[in-house]
Length: 293
Ligand code: AMP
Ligand code: MN
Ligand code: MN
Ligand code: MN
Image 1 (cartoon, rainbow, N blue to C red):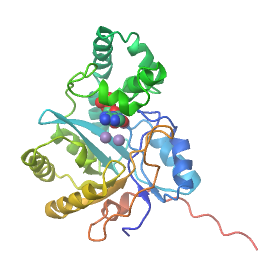
Image 2 (cartoon, rainbow, N blue to C red; image 1 turned 90 degrees about the horizontal axis):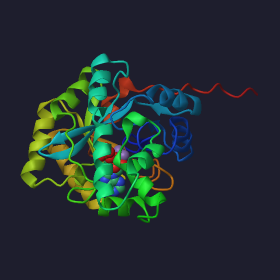
Image 3 (cartoon, rainbow, N blue to C red; image 1 turned 30 degrees about the horizontal axis):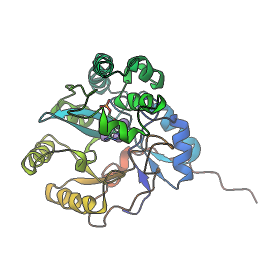
Image 4 (cartoon, protein in one colour; image 1 turned 180 degrees about the vertical axis):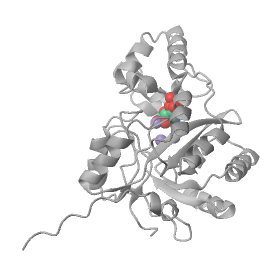
């Protein structure tokens, strides 16, 4: 069960990835993934296409999303898995979370213009497959295209992160709302890439305690953005808080992502995989008819 090649975190053109849901499904299949979830930021507009593409290429599928949340003045990402994508409260909550992205992007462009980088709003928008989901990643692509930086990692280091020009503080959803939107739609809430936040030990404890108390069910232990040591550390956290464990690459683009779809270590054997608790929510790929002899 823990050795399943599940990839339950990646992005398409519906948010800040560069591949379509169909291209991702085919790529996941080619990489040996057997259970897949598309988890676009704050947006489930790609779910019908992703589920259909998964069925067409023989992948089991869980619905997915990655919700932006503000917790103790930091942005935390909560992945939702196995929810009903037609749920009205979830749809409305996500719409509310997406609101304000355009305004924030305008402010980011104004900041960048002050240091001599002109036209960043229009430049970033060109990369956004979904104009309602303009993200820092689209700005990063524009700054690479125009030769300001050599890659998107350099952009984030120099421009789009806290304390750097081009960073605009933004208020996302509440943790409580995000967990509720997911769980009342029948899904499981999962803390994404916990090692990426800059919390003190006490703040992190508050995050996990509050999350668990609100009905959160899982944590990403194996992700493209965790080192082996971080994976060990969050194995302990999952056990301590009685959370199931998830596994996902956070793949965005063949040209940019360091971790390929499905190319991750197995979940440690002592953990309960999220897919065990979500078994009823998995959309199984049709079994191919036996070849005629
Ligand atoms: P946003 O939701 O607009 O704040 O954009 C966040 C996205 O930017 C993340 O989902 C990543 O895709 C990307 N990102 C954030 N920080 C970094 C970083 N340090 N290096 C590379 N990409 C990053
Ligand atoms: Mn992203
Ligand atoms: Mn994330
Ligand atoms: Mn992500």
